Length: 571
Image (cartoon, rainbow, N blue to C red; front, side, top):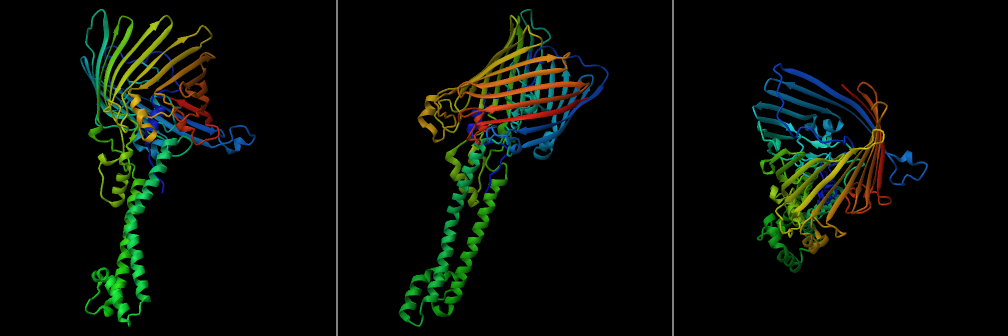
């Protein structure tokens, strides 16, 4: 029996992707939109359309043989997909509307709710702005790399290869922002914004293909075995009763009932068992055969009914996406936050607070057996009984961006608070701190730009984690290292009047010595037509690493790579 799920269900995935909120594309200067007063709307309503259509073709290099044989190409898996994106913008006197539609195989087949990628309606009321819809909102000063951007989940079905904003999953939300008319000479560009969502979408992972997380497969196997054990335990009494009924019939056939001693012994032994099935103690020999047949038929029927029930209930675990996971589409998983940003002198600063839940789940192994037994027995379960849940999370954040000589620097700091403040609950994540720091600058060489950022996380109270060891603590690290740092370097250059762009992004996991290298070349042929050649190479052989989750099935080389050709037209 196969357990399937659209999102991964282990704490390992959380550890492996914590801080992996980066993409290869669009590194550069500071993001716009964080500061300043609201734009004045045109008095004449306007409606504009634009879009993009493209096709991607990818070939995975032969990871099994390690790319060292002449026939490796013949063993390579290929993928291809076309897409269409449409965006509509309407601007009124005091309102505007933005809508984005995305059509590709993933959104149409697997996640039809993603066809409407975003939909936002805004109203302007003096210094106030109110937005509502299905939105993506970005908090923090990092350049496509954040520890404070918590409202939207990530779509990791193509790992971290899409652009950061493209793999964010839009969420129904309401946003209210206030910009004072005048702040002062020292402080300017003050903006206060509050966000609320009535639900939460969890991070999404691939369920087939080259990028299925190893920990998801491992959990599937573990749960499958436990389901089989629970089914066996549930069915054993019914099977035992059926076998007993058959043995009674066999013993009756072998008994000489003309011998009063043997007949008396038989009736004495099975009288209690057979009376409910029609054995008349006054006329036992006349009713014996009918009673035994009734007994055999009833136990066989009960056994078949129990097996059918167990299989149907077990099938529910396999096919129902909510069977193992808590339902995050309810008010319990609502999210809220407040952010204040402003400029002090030449420093762009901000502070924020977020309340919600982690987007990747943890497993409470103490509930696994009882949950599966209740499902198999048909007893019924609630969300509180489920063993995969999303830890409650509060994030207190600081952010900054400023110029140091020719370096555009950016910083984020987060304190992540959970309910396991003491670090003693193995099934809840410990508190932690996380950070992003980096810069970009234009080099005096052609049009070269270099962008360097470092992101990391430190799990607090990690001495408590080591006390429990590998028996199930969601934060456990077999190397005993409770810091997780990554260095992200992007180098780009532009040629032929900026029609040709070359770049390469390298991500290095410091503690686990793992790599992800992504070269890319784009050429704008004419107008909106662009051709792109890109590739990726991942190496990770440490189970505690962030990339190991996607290379673990290749036990020989622990690496994965692809080359890709793309064409797109923007209009």
